[in-house]
Length: 349
Image (cartoon, rainbow, N blue to C red; front, side, top):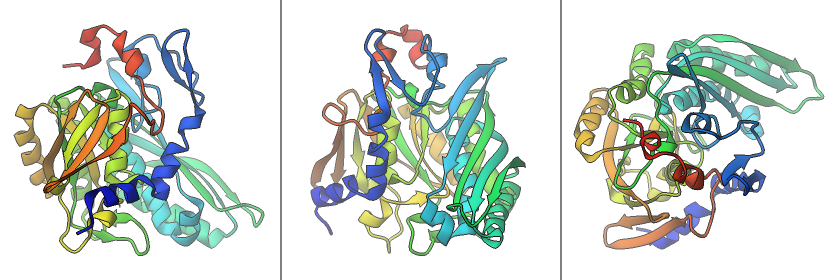
């Protein structure tokens, strides 16, 4: 077995982790109002509701008539679009639907923009999106198609949704349990980190599995959720924690994993169904039971704290994966803003 600190060092320097850290230079601080502001938004922070529209969560949330309207967008890597066009189309939809679910929401509709040199390859992209929308029961309502030999192949897909009870990384507080929910009934897409657990699965099963997230939110069983994305399990954990500058103690051995996959590979997965969650200790048993009822592995893997340090334990070894006191990750941290909000607004019941 690889030494834990050696493993963490490898994971800190993957290309996916580096791409997330590349976001940070675009973040600037408005020191006059102590608000952390992204250059990629024109929103103004004057309440927790307005902060939900800022980057950091899996989707932006805007209050409307007693619920939240959700917006998210995913761009596929150009190499992925070229080499795996059908799966890129499917994955773009699937990732967006997971982003909506991670907010406690239900998807309403999907739109896309694609560029390609080949009409045949462009059709594969479109077929992947159409099939995923049909499987998850979300309508594809249009987009923008560009086909010409002068274009570089590219795909961007956006989604809209609604949430009755919002999950948000802004709700993370010390002493919440951290759970992972993973569908282990899958396999890697060849030569990628993508863990596919949707093939040959009935549409009704895919839809009932993704519906667990809004069901758990509306039952007040969860505080926060984060879709496990291309940054892998630990990179996605950082994005769950960074908005509040929280730390965590994680037991690596508690993470469900196939026996024939090593840790360095498994911790980099981008699963078609995978979420990190926070909840009160007395709610975990019910959460785990509900995921198990849908054949989803779910376990408690750690606990949040106020240290800003993410520590990992594996058997008798212990190491620091990240220290937010010394290094930003994406830069989307709102801890200073949250401190000036009234306490009842910080973590809705």
